[in-house]
Length: 283
Image (cartoon, rainbow, N blue to C red; front, side):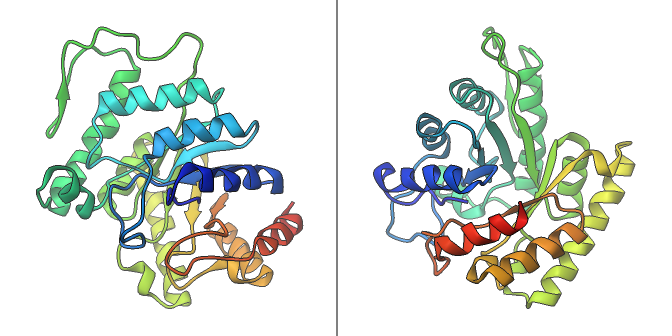
């Protein structure tokens, strides 16, 4: 995870570094404001990934996550397919409900969890409708009509869809539509002690299994991604902690572990050598 903090001239070296040391995918987040970056510049996620595509060759590039609270199905599909085209098919479109602070920053209103959940579901379904070639679609919170353009550039496949989900409604949405499910534990989890945190993740993994079966999908058919580092569990403090976190994540069925880049805000900095040595052990 490379936070989109600061000018591109400072961010770009970490995208090159991530590819050079052997990471498979690099993510950035899609926030208008964030508690970890007061008084700092946050670049726009999809524009940043387009720039990252120009300085990398192999590594996949993703949003973790794009925010449904200020994205619409049509514009989301347009920017996602543009990055997918420019990057040569390397985009992972991560989408989540978004943060109330971003709703307030974008349109000046506070939205309830129920309102944000309904919009998340609409943006996911509406996005799929756009890529399916639908010209008009009606949801509870957003809709579109008169869409006459192609859903994607010729010969460009739709990107992998990653959905961040923690509660029952979001888990059901991810189980029904996602190629990959992602969790960081959810709101409040960052204050949990390590064992409580891993127990919460185990509970969420069981919930996702149940939601997948309810959606008539094999739980093993959906990839599982875990973001660590924002709370008490910080894998990049040492090689031992990194390997321990990877082992515990794998035991819960997670096939992807996402950690913060060496240069990150809010005290999440780490030594690049920790990443490099841990990756060498995991390969």
